[in-house]
Picture 1: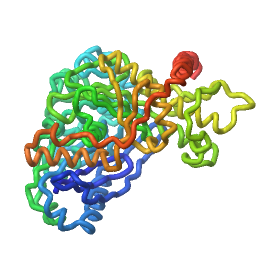
Picture 2: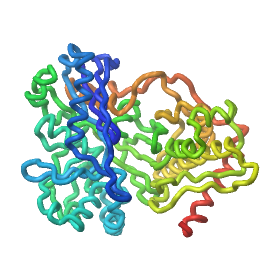
Picture 3: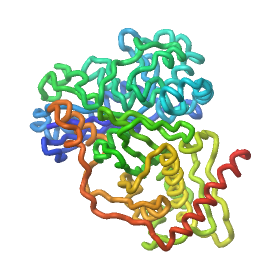
Picture 4: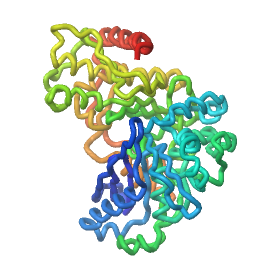
Length: 483
């Protein structure tokens, strides 16, 4: 048996698989986010441990015998969070999360230093870890003076599990301190935030062993002491391992709260000007690129709140057949945008409203606006040298065939729907635990699921979608200066 632990923003999931990679069972515990000020987003790391204990307790209650047979553990987690520890590994303040924007000024200052984009291959976004430390230094100097170690969220769980300060390449790529091409910490970038490599965890590949389960926890959970814990991965890279998106040209589109267009690469292909994320993958000698949109299903959820209808009711009003874009255009910038604009101040808009703009037209515009935002990411990836011929759809929004049809037609490539199964970050983490424990070939383990259905672009609507995308593209610069 192999255990995957995924520390998300809203909860911890513990997933158990067997040696044939069949899901045996899972446990879950919820987490809350604290927002003490506008733009702030924090969690207490002690809550992560409590949630992990709760998730494993649920798993043990139903599958205690199988849990006892665990031979490897993998970790996945929300990226970018700044978990600050003193010399005794005591947490100094609540963790500043990935979606916290308080460090926008510090991020802009670091990004103005040309070394950051050159070495990391990425823009320094406010959500990244380095500007958070610059903010702490500027606003909480007494806390900053006591910082002995900076850990990412899942790696704080590793510290609790194993007693080791270790991270891996995919998660470290989102700190703005990693030389992403050379897969090592960048001393110059650490020095720019008044830190050095002593403040950082050791680095391994996601498939490597990175500590062993402490005897105390093993005894409590009915497991063997010394079970190896894999390096693991940041949440998107872990999901990619679960989806088998690890080979050149393999890609998925994730329709979750936020949206991700993820492509695996065998080479390092940075393109920071387009706001594409270029990160190390969880597998050795592999990288990945991501276009990120901040409000994917969140855009439809917003419309649900406004209309008092749930998502299924809204999309059902559109019928089953894809329609040509109408006169209403939606910009899904409800909380700013990453790719391709890197603009935290921009906000969403409906353009082209008229007396005849009924509810279904607004729903259609929202689905199309998110599809066009993914098209922006596709164009950014193309600029970086990545050409995609198809993608696999995951996430809650992928249940809407209409939405997938809009995305396929906007992108101009087929969208595959995987057969039923759990292919998320916890499953990817369990796969990494299996690889670390058995030294198996990663490519033989991280295989793609069977395809249940393929949504192809609607050739009859391709021209209308292209015209609508050009209108969509023209609107951002038109409204930017008035926001």
